[in-house]
Structures are given as C-alpha cells and as structure tokens.
Length: 77
Image (cartoon, rainbow, N blue to C red; front, side, top):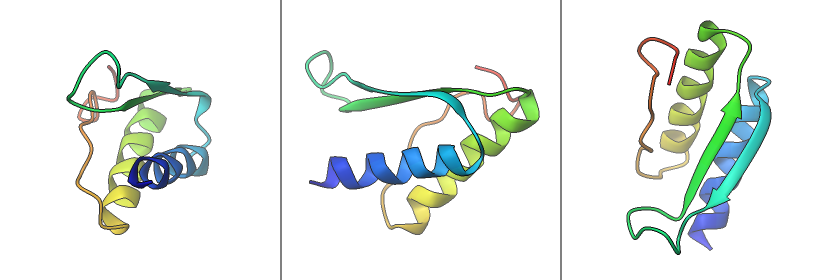
C-alpha cells in the first residue's frame, strides 16, 4: 500500500513540472534495494533540476523517506 502512495506522489510531482514520457518500472524482482524506478524526460537541464526538486519536496512533504536522485546538481543524468 505504501508503494502505491509514494509512486502516486512521485508521478504527480513529475506531472506538475510537465515531465514527458513518464515511466514507472517495477524492479522488485530484480533487486531488494527498491521496488520501482521512475524515469521521465525533460526539455532542458533547468527542467531536469526542477523535476528532481519537485519529486524530492513532494515526497518529503508527505512524510516519506527521501528518494535517491541522480543528476540534480547539473541537470543531467
């Protein structure tokens, strides 16, 4: 149940900043570290930074542990 709640928060946060091609990939059978990976496209490094920030703030604001993010500092993967 918690997985569905946090994934909904992540997807909403990505949609708020107009991410494109949002994919939620279930990797629970591949690793025990996490259950899902969210992947999305952006039009610029500035939007990429905004997407990462939006997800981080939304997840934290809902009381979940902060997710791992990649590329937030420079807006690239």
